[in-house]
Image (cartoon, rainbow, N blue to C red; front, side, top):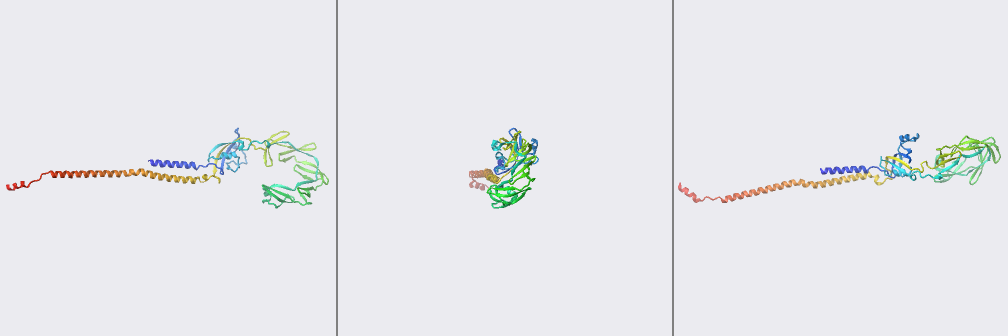
Length: 407
């Protein structure tokens, strides 16, 4: 009975240890899918991966797919505190992660808050402008935009077709490409219903002359300019602006004011402004100015995430133990079972053998005792017989003779 109890205990412990040992935990390099609910310190839910929660909190977005977020631990695709909080979590575990601003979107930076006047510019209704326009001889573009337009990677010396004349790649650095305009002096070009001629090329610039006539219209970003008068060097133009103009700061309303047109920002709190790949939000609007905050909306906030690890896929950077844990624990179990089997067979065989052999030995000893006792008895009987035989008197022959004489 003891042997069976011991064996059952060993196997039970091994199975329990195997279950604990093979449980996945999040490590660097792992690909983890998590459901989460993000809240601010006052309990406001600002983001979630759960559809029902988004609908409940009024933050549902129609163009978003609500599903567990996939995170590659260590690649920096999420805020540092989120990845750090996932480390060590088990598959299926739920916990709340508290992330201070330093590990989230950083503290609020006052230098990223700009105040702009609502009136961006004033345009005269009628003005005199130069007939010549100067443009830089070289310009810079991103490699991604170059590849998107020309379908190949830029290389120094490559000739490309620009809008009005050829261009040459003169430098490729990091993410950017430097291109030089290659027009010919005296070449006339008609672009967007405007004719102009290349009159001069200097080391740094190209000089263009507008070839226009009275009554012609020049298209511009704010609207059209109608030619009223013209000389060899200047043009007198009348502005015909649009009613609204899209600018980098948002929509601008064009308002007539005396001899000018006023370009006034038409902004509202919450409007998004994109400037040099940075997104800002309008946080304040007055009659005179607009405040745009380019800090992240969650900058300076302590964030709380209730996360559940839905799935853990062990990555290439997982440790040796994690990568081969099943093999290691399988081998250990085999070794322990083998050792337990050897121990039990050896221990119990030694314990039980004396018990098994004791019965024949006792029986043999009993038989030997009985035989000894029987032998002793026989010897005693024989001795008694011999004693009796010796003590019995013998008949004398002289006694017989008288009997014969009597007859």
